[in-house]
Image (cartoon, rainbow, N blue to C red; front, side, top):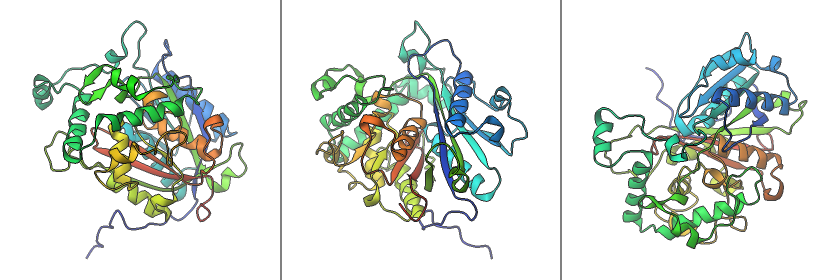
Length: 402
């Protein structure tokens, strides 16, 4: 008889072999940066990340790529960078959860000895000069069941997230003010981030005054649109000791893919993949939410922050609204969440947005916004309509010392 499948919430140990660490971070210009393709952004981000680690491209023997709606970043990036004889090469797509997954697979490859130094990169260039930001994610045509949805007025991702948020509001009494507290708190962090696209202070009154996109979402409930690229380099902790930057150790990871997109079910808007991905990653690291110092969450919408906090266990289910409105968020809050401003106020590079800020915080290199206690940093990635989730547990300390 074969062995029973492992419970995804059973504590696991790091795979035998070398322990993985993020040793390089490369970030291009981001925001309204025109006349460059996603592939060009990606190549620059990899070069910056490799240089940040004190390595050369010749040291890289693995490459994982991902692109957003703009496309154009694929396996050809290896050729563009002059990479040869790679041990690992793949193009990945799991939407906003992809960045976290890339680090997970790179970590497995390093731990097993399959590859020694792997670059993971995401880049996108949906913005075009002279066109609106809304046009960047406009409809690309809908067929089949999605065509029926469009005819009914559910024409885009924002509409579907709005339905999820409304379900949560109707079930638990979550309010518009509570969503607004998330936008206001993250804007306060963005004010200390020189890379942020929006840095001006934001009040709750200004949040409510912003135009409706799809009720219950105002403009300021929705993420930015950005051009740019971000890459990280993953290698072994043993090798990291001789490199240029302080290593960020990967202590745990988890994924969850509920597989319910476009399906009517009892948990829509109430539970996301974070409910499995988060506990799995923390169990692998031998930690709990009470050990977490910094939380970098995927925030395509304010609601995504709220439901992820609930599903990770920072507050009971249904109490996320009260939790975020009770002095929890912002630089003076009791929980340090999305310390760079997130995708709502800083920049939108899918899962690389929370990951890049996590690396900076774990290194102690976040400048004015640096959190004093940063021994354990929890990172989320969300894809689809709450349908894919990745979680990473990162630390400046090697496993056993966090």
